[in-house]
Amino acid sequence: MAKFKLRVNGKARTVDASDADKPLLYVLRGLGLTAAKDGCGLGQCGACTVIIDGNAAPSCQVTIANAQDKLITTLEGLGSAARPHPVQAAFIEEQVPQCGYCTSGIIMSAAALLAKTPKPSEDEVRAALDGNLCRCGIHVRVVRAVMAAAGQRGLP
Image (cartoon, rainbow, N blue to C red; front, side, top):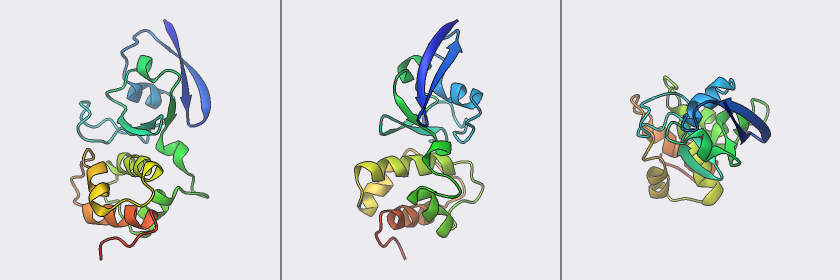
């Protein structure tokens, strides 16, 4: 059993794992951080997206070994009910979620975008969220919410 040092939501964590190739998604869920969802397992749906060193990443495709000593932020560490992240607040205001399965991954991708590009165009928002799939068809509300979180007028 090897020990891996992770920095998750601002806290140092040491995790025992017998397999260095264990997906970060499973480690996070084992820590009780369940916002990242196990969708496709192939990094194609975005349901498990987290932010690693400032970049949105599918946690099902990042190994625990590759996540070691990196700054990992999950939805649980992004904001709180009392102080939501601007993207979370905009999602609530715009009533974005339907089933909610994809929502945390989309929020994490949007938060990573806004951290790097505070005033993105709608095309930049769409490009940043291209790896996040939603079966409910909430795409227009998502773009509108991300634009609102950036302090810009979104789609009508």
